[in-house]
Image (cartoon, rainbow, N blue to C red; front, top):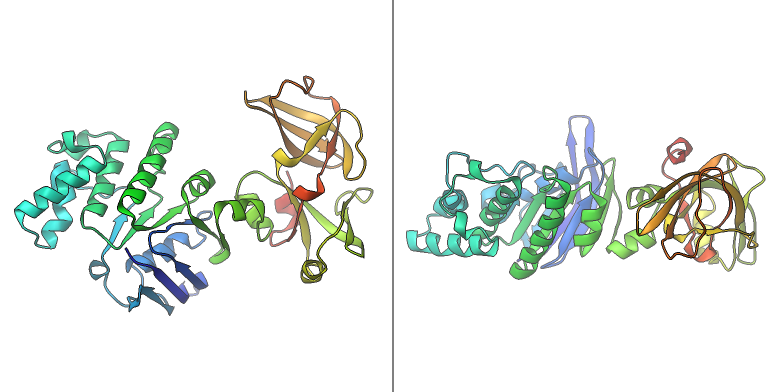
Length: 370
């Protein structure tokens, strides 16, 4: 396994800048995820690491070795593609053995390593079957075995689960993570699926429009997003564009932009943090599970609202509540204590201060609308 260092790498295709200057260090044995919407630069970055694209500027190192201009076959990386890229006319054994044959390994060594890899992905009993006779999940495992059998320093996975149904995706997430832990291999995983990123990763880089917005652990990204884009892309959140109305001795009053009569109050706000944020457009982010839905008013940061939709999911009640001109989403755990709520019911919604995050706004206000 190897560490990876990206030093100010950028990639342009003509006049289109696909990846802006990116600095990133990935540790040995780390499961690192590139997360973002389509066209955000995550796959382009992965392909630069694989050697399929050379950066327009900047450098790439594996450990201490500069591989910026090294061809893909000499980087010792294993790649799993979105469409698996298996050879349909070959058996499972032949597909997995292909990379070893290219490396001119002996027949006995190929047999040993292929059998070992197929046991690890639990496909040894399918060794002589044509890949076209396998299910999608089984083909995915063949692609993983083929990437791992060459004993790469780095494993690269480009949206490998996007073609599978929901149940198989859940199974394969566990399988990929188990294999990564067994091999201890440095892994980069590209996805647009937030659940995959949060459940599998040691760390995540969130991309948008060619720019890395934030790097952190799943908990850091979810609980302390860097801006409103990250907050909205990682899980569900309520984003409220606000304008500072007053700030004194750590207490900040923030007016809702679309409802002049409503404001949120934050106490004991760090002065340095406020100085950093106060000169730019701001939004407050609060997760649905952090909102408190009450039957009576409860003081500061509490607003009357009307239930527009209530969805019972078993474990929780998902509520969509109209507060003034804004629709907020709340999630109430099914603890049997809250009365049955229906469309049209009047409730009170409290925004607990400790769960509110004041964030710089990089999206337009229209993108915050329901």
